[in-house]
Image 1 (cartoon, rainbow, N blue to C red):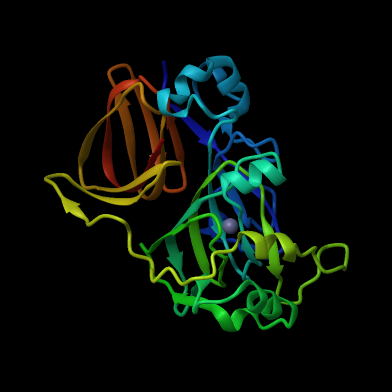
Image 2: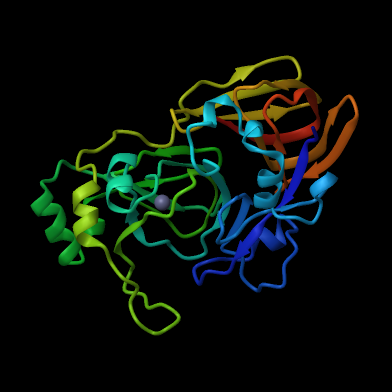
Length: 320
Ligand SMILES: [Zn+2]
């Protein structure tokens, strides 16, 4: 088995910026890069394998060829590869939206629901996002605020800084605000109910569709009381520190700040993904070395065993 490095699929949605090209040296002919899908087996934008036996093939072809065993025992109950990880560069705000939970999404959309996590990789001064409601609301009051275009008045607006972390539980109404550069870890699902789009129109000149009834069905109408704290405290070790960002039944994410060297192991329970946020270095096993720099994505199959991250870097680890 090999560790693999992935090249992302890019999306040039209208609200995107150029920081992923300018600051992360991502190579694409697109003028705007709104999103880079770093760990993606999604048909709308699979990542590409950069090394090894599957070099030049899509991540989907790699997964098909390698078999489901490399997902790990914790992920065997999923029909599709369970995780999608993206960088998102919001030059303009994204629409106000909410995702259903598994129960609702499987019943109504015939796919899994969507829990997601945002890590603020970078942001301009004064950047903010919307995270849940700012007061208890009835379904009727919530619907009226959507219909009157006053939904922003009842949303929890949070000013953000680099390193903040938000777990967007399914049902939490949310939007990424202007100036945020985010690493998003999410369940591999597309069920999104849009409730407000800042009066914008799409490429066809028409407003994008809203999904008010479904949003009213699924939204959590009580404030969460959270403001971007990771789940765990930063723990400092000799050559690195780690912080538990989120631990859920869908995925676990840990941030590592590596000063020189970090020894890790991937057992049979889950694949591991490493997204490089800052710095550069190598991942090294007994018979493999892969160089990386910020913006890169490394995938390690379940059961791989021991390896090291060597360098000065800031990395997000995700597993099931
Ligand atoms: Zn979302």
